[in-house]
Structure formats: C-alpha cells, structure tokens
Length: 80
Image (cartoon, rainbow, N blue to C red; front, side, top):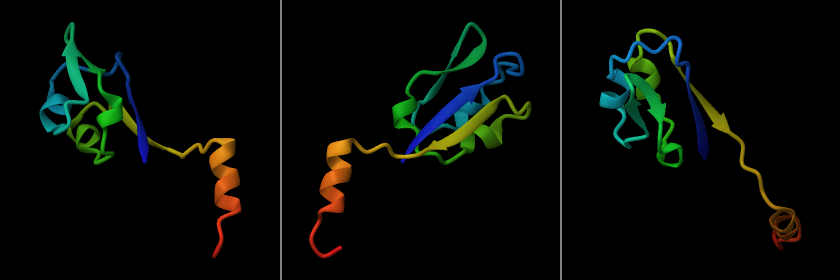
C-alpha cells in the first residue's frame, strides 16, 4: 500500500519530533521546517503524525491503481 504525507508548513514549528519518530527517514528538516523527502519508503505507521503536537502532518492511504493490462489479466484468471 502507498501513502501520501502532507506537511502544513504554516503549522510546522520545526521541533523535529516527526523526524525523530520516523524509522524510515521519510521526513527531514530543511530551513527549520519538516519536509517529505522519501515518501515511497513510508510504512504508514503514523508515528510522524502522533509526534506532531501542532497537527502539521497528515497521512493518507492511497488506493492501488492497476494498469488496464493487469486488470484484464486478473479478470480472466482461472479459478476466480
């Protein structure tokens, strides 16, 4: 599953709690604000959100988009 992380720069106080809590190094600090730098590595655990006392981070689960070819193959899969 993929996840989308959004940081509200206006709310971010630069406390670094999100950076400290993230085990996957998804967020870093740039110019005193949290910035998402490795979103593909996000596990969706939510520790960045939980650590942010200013509610500056939002985590959203993204749906899986299958290509038309993959959808066709799955529809025609025997035994289903």
